[in-house]
Length: 106
DNA sequence: TGGGTGACTAAGT
DNA sequence: CACTTAGCCACCC
Image (cartoon, rainbow, N blue to C red; front, side, top):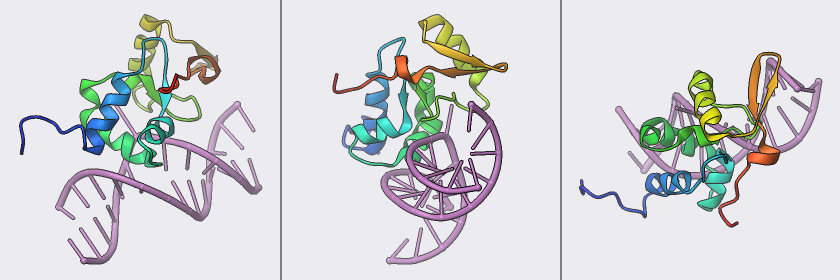
């Protein structure tokens, strides 16, 4: 129980990547996991569910471009504030990955 | 130590 | 383009 989080932990690593995402950009769970050298996209989501309250969770979306389920209204407010490119489809919005996808190696 | 779960992904229908 | 099925990996009890 160290008071300071270790950057060696998978959790801290995920948070670091999410915080490295610039405003107006988004990353998929798979991209974040790939940055960590793993395919644990689900584990990334689990980390966000627990510690996402302290990071820009709205900048992390699914590979399909859909925002977090049951949180799309909250995410939309952030996207509008960050000028994130989104596409509307029959009342439901979707992030334009072709224009908003961010690469950490860039 | 082992089994079940999940803010997921990709492929097929 | 949207829904369904199977696969993966890390975390929790």
